[in-house]
Figure 1 (cartoon, rainbow, N blue to C red):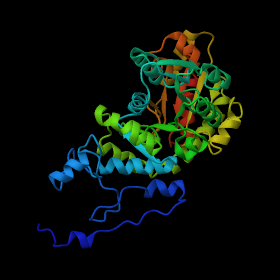
Figure 2: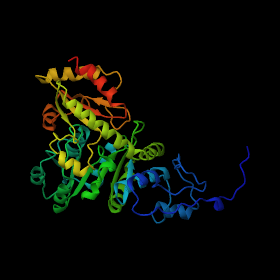
Figure 3: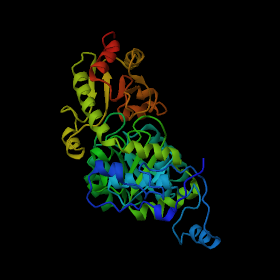
Length: 415
């Protein structure tokens, strides 16, 4: 079929710059690169690893960084740029850089900002892979580190040294949902001449924007809530233009931990429903946490939305009066081995909900952290992080609350 004749330049659908002070839910569906000459309403997916250059001179200028323009897939892609623009707008930062996974974004941050002899202070309650990456892998390259209790500001203060470059917190933490005071840590970091980095996976910019409370760097595993349906791997760093362009981008161009255009497009579209998903899933999680607190075989529920949570007041202040969509609960048991057996029984009794180590899905996912996300840690490290054998993490999705409760009762009521 012959294409209709048209003048591409005259058909160009120019996109006016977005007005300032738009709300988050508007930015989530509107912030992106300009439309192409075809005027597509849904952001385009550019599947290409290379770009044809207009001339040899232009190509030379672009590769030298003297002229804007795409050169190679490892250095940039329009679809990836749209995702970066949208996430930066939602987090309130000047720029963002997309990566192939959440862990690769942490790797990129550490490689970009640290050298041998530098020091990192980070929470002992962070994701297991983060603990291993900083405490073991980077130690091989001469980077020193100190783990501290997530909520103990005095411990953070005492851990800072003259060579401390980064304070790194995750709030709420995975899986115990501990909350730290972002503003207090930011003040502490800046007084020491260091950066504060915050893992904002659980809360997302819908519930909290760490930069508004003084954080310098915000990291995301886009695999989680930003995508929202468990389809792809993705990560991102959000920060100032100076940090992203001056520090992180050169390392990523050489290191190659880039996000694929297809995965970027999937997460870009996932951002459009992030606001309504986070609110709906947080409401269900609060209802489930309240219900679990009353069950006789549950010894404790970890959820920031509960009054019983140690940092409840702080969480409500920082997280827009919502507790998020992740909770954890301890199965009642007399000893660790019995606790593990009982936790496994609850998980193996599920018929509707999923036994799955991911989170952020519209499907409710449950996992046993001590044998999965924190399984490679030593028992002492797990104990320090509060990860017991009877702990079950529940990332609440969009199923009916009554159906979730019935499914959990299959195991809880038969212990």
